[in-house]
Image 1: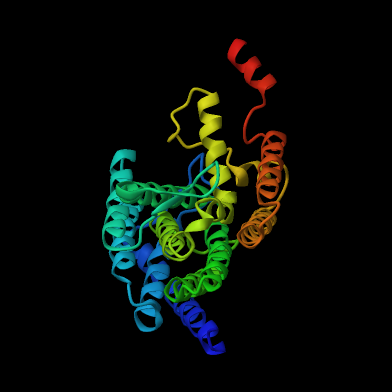
Image 2: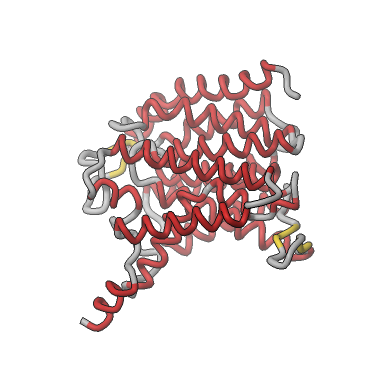
Length: 345
């Protein structure tokens, strides 16, 4: 068991650093023109600096370098690559293939130097050792998480809050299986998100930008790989996916919705979870708090699945059914009747 100070110090240090560095990153972003200009798809009505990700990155790795685990190189190199790719995209714009290529490169570096996913769940019971597919499976997992966090970063406080909640669940899993390094990194990530949120919660003063959102996704995926997927092969992918179920489900709905409409899956729209909640009359703060609540709910479900020998599949099934029902009700995806009308009108 960690001493009490080990619970507090990493998170507190990262929190203080993120809180202190974010105003500096904001001023630097304004000075160099790193701003998010309003358009028909954006929620902001005035240019917003997007340098918050740099502050979160710096807070995370300064703290990790002093207090963190022993095997930081994969996190540092991979995180730096996604940060640079994101900054270029924020500043000048990148094509989807180039952005994706940068994400794959970062994930490859991580998988080559660091932990990998070595087992997947067997639907008929037990686990399957993936052998030579460990690297491509790890890359697929990491790129997927990077993108689901980036996709949901469309409203004040959403990505940072959800990331902090997911990191809290990963902390619990790492502690459950005695994984010291990912537990400390989870604490640091929680602290960095909490320190950043006062500037990012509605009304936001600074955005994460693609650089920050992709960095948060990369850290979540890396910590999950090292703490949950490596520390306890028997849990497979189900528990980490449940922990990230809100952004994962939102991304899945976006893919289904765009396929239903004959759109490219990478083409952005204004019908993500937060867009639909705002259209139903919720404020940005209420929408963010609802997303936080749902993330806590699925995180608890993931921890229950981890510790329960019975009822796990039922819990997962109930969550999927409830979320699917909600998606149909609020218009995240179209039901069969609406789809048929759209196809044959």
